[in-house]
Length: 379
Image 1 (cartoon, rainbow, N blue to C red):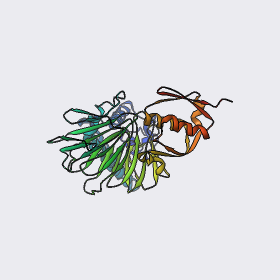
Image 2 (image 1 turned 90 degrees about the horizontal axis):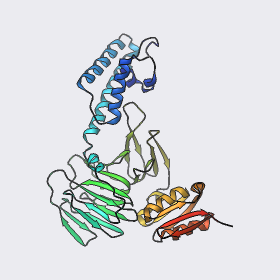
Image 3 (image 1 turned 60 degrees about the vertical axis):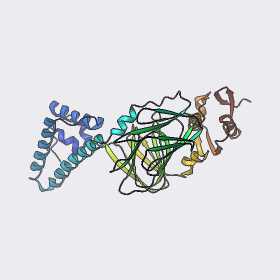
Image 4 (image 1 turned 90 degrees about the vertical axis):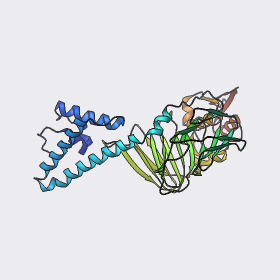
């Protein structure tokens, strides 16, 4: 531990990020610390050569100074090693973000009523079925749509396809490796036409159920706006709409590893999941909270129904609005806190589903064309 009277250096933050607001920094040290922090957190640029050399020299001097006191040798060495490894990991993640950059350039276009399959050559195929099925051949060169349309797509090198599902529709995609993905309403999935040799990687904005084909030598990665999920072969549901505050993962079988921007200085945290667990990531608090759940409550939408247990009316309305592509408005914001438990058959219309809820919850349903209003039941 350093003497409190000694001015602290930029490398001290790497050892203990709680010192970030410490007023014992010289102005130059504070600028260096902020620059390093901004570089790591944004994950857009590398440290400059001069900054790298300055940081490495500082850490080396800290270790040499610590050797004079045997009690500090391991602390200094471990801090230096962790700092350099941490920076390396972050920069590796940056270099592997090609699919993320590509995905961010494709708009969801929420006005469309069609499911859109966008091929790598920017050809766009419109699909009008309520629950479409898109299947790829093992080499990725042939695409079948609803077992009625066949498309040839010979590709050399890296190329990405995209499926965008509007509100009110869903899609099932079978990738060349036989992994199956059920894509929920209002979602976007970006994936390579042919997976790279070292790993399988897709990008999701929205909600999807994954049944990943096992392949230990080629891990499967799902990137989202907030999370990265790594699996070897498993079944899980991932909800990561960009307009939702939090992202959640529910594991039905197998195991997954979550990577996310955590609270440590270097920013990257990891957490393992086991079957039957729900993990919710809060990007503001930069924390993941896991709880034991009934996974059917989160995966039943794939089979056309919702299993609810004390769900808030506000969250139910949001799910139904996406699923049916209808505007549902609560007349009184306080209604959002009411809860409902039961099974909802999504083969029924939105108004029929809401009328079932109204039989148990003290509310009334009023429908005008594609708009549904919910208000307190009138006496």
